[in-house]
Image (tube, rainbow, N blue to C red; front, top):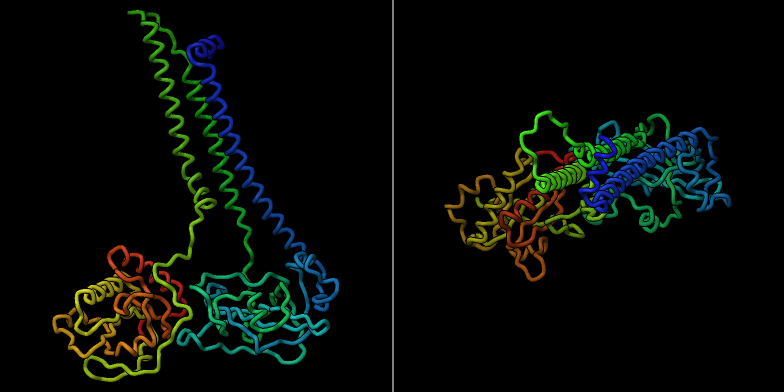
Length: 470
């Protein structure tokens, strides 16, 4: 394209308009390129972090007497992370905690955590001793490990406290728990625990495996994001050149002229073609950029929550009361005989009005909607009153567990929301017999879909230790 042709085009179009499009393309290329360099910077930061970990691992082993000494201050403690250390002292075994749902070599089990008292300084540090598998037949059974008494020597790496997993509400302070908050554990035990922990290294011993997973830097993800941003910058530049420069080039002249075009019409056609090209360029840019923009907007602005439940979590959880219930055939059984399986419970008078029948219907549909997982959840109707159950309901209740129980007895265990009745809710009980969730009243198709999502989450979270049937 000659300069004269380009100048002629500028005369037909506003110079200001051309400058605005040029600036828009320039700014867009600048922003996308800077985002690409930002991702490369994040990747380099993680590589530097990995190199620092490797370098610290090659430094001389710290003596355990350093912990709690005058040189061990809060300011320099961060620099101790990933350093090898050798502790001499004793285990405080009575405060051992088993962190549930932790994996090693793709097997579910426990991380065993025990406080360790350093002999030289009296400092107490939490030691991540190792991993051990769980008993799938009894979730509450503690696996057998050996904890030496008296003075022992432990080799390990200084680390942060163990990471936290997803938890449904506040956890009970039991030996088996999902997470361990160091500050809460310090208050719970009364021990002066340091703000760090030690990951015990070495071969398997004391019944514990120590094949700890290596931390991944994830730099590949940042390189991929950088490639996308640089690709978008290149696309913007190419589209600008194509629509703003290449398509402005005058068409070659032919040797035969049939009629001379109207100058005004030619200008209008050219302007229309130019506007259409610009809109096309904008449309292509928006289509290419929208997934990236949407993902960043969602992550940094909307920040979706991952812990929203339709059902209300019950805190503290309530276990089965010690009482007997009656089957429809008159047989008496202990209520805690229902342990061993997830329970979806409704409460209603045995006469079963329309609302009761609606709850029974949705209970059945919720269970069936779980597909192959439905055998892990049991459909229970706690029938109150002395009225006989309508024979017409019996075929629909063929897969349900129907138990007669007084309203007073139920109220000692299950409770409705404030201002509501027992019969307005569906209740969820875990395989340990703990009532842990209550669905809002007024169930319909939309509410049932939300309830199903909650049940799916619960079943996925318990997949490692829960089994179908009793």
